[in-house]
Length: 349
Image (tube, rainbow, N blue to C red; front, side, top):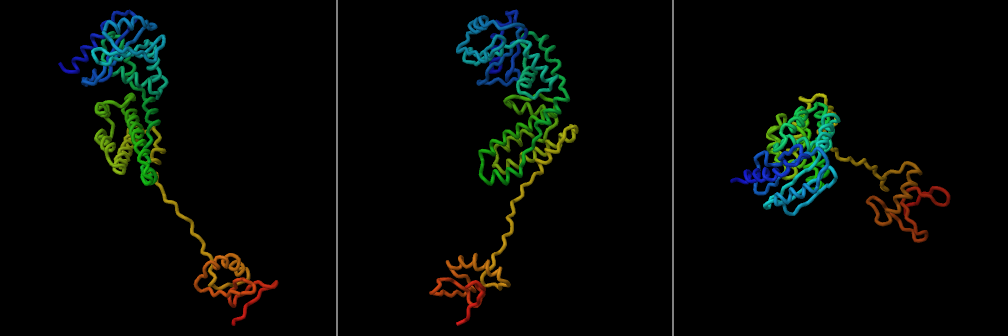
């Protein structure tokens, strides 16, 4: 017996006690078991729908009947809760909720076209679940979900088609060696890309992005070899990863342009073609040197006031200085200078 067969048998044995409750409307098996991917580390996920409020005494009796250990109740309320216990070392999760809860989540998707996580999780989980009790009721409840609304698809694409600004990452983040920030941006941009492709292919959003190989196989409109390129980007050096992600985003935006023309891609094109220009420093004006030709008295006043103090620390080439012992002032030979209320000129010695 394989792990898949053993876990299926255990799930059917656990469910038997719940089918005797007239308040239980339907039961379905979710997770990896309906997909045939049960392993030695898998758990059992069950969805139970009720007509009325929960009877917690019945739930405790069912746990004891199945030989459950380490029982936990999470998100406990009068109408719903998540029950977890272990049977033979296998973790068994039971989601107890009324039918009205599932009907409300379906209405949020089909009528209000909500992008919240919970309605999409419910729809994706229920469509992939294996009915164990109340098959006719489940088929009737899920029938509207099989027709994906066009308005929801457009809304999903518009909200998530935000390509990676490759130029900004390349010239700003990577040159500053902000690797933590780069590897925090990468999964977010991949998540936006997958949500864009799910909307383009009329698929509901997954929660934890498990079993991506099955997900990408369902995407008829997607970049070539999507899964392998995503995995390569996650394992590559940052500059190579950035080139792969940029190419994937360009192909994704082109698919949206061809197959969903009602979506405005102006902002997406701006992000793809965004360039970072280096800052150019303004040209600095050269200071006049003392050795140059002075045309008028105002220009000489500038040289006298601003250049002469600098020259005291060390004379510049071409500047002949004379230290006059009486006045203790520096003066330039044969150049006009202000003294005694008028401009004067030193005589050569």
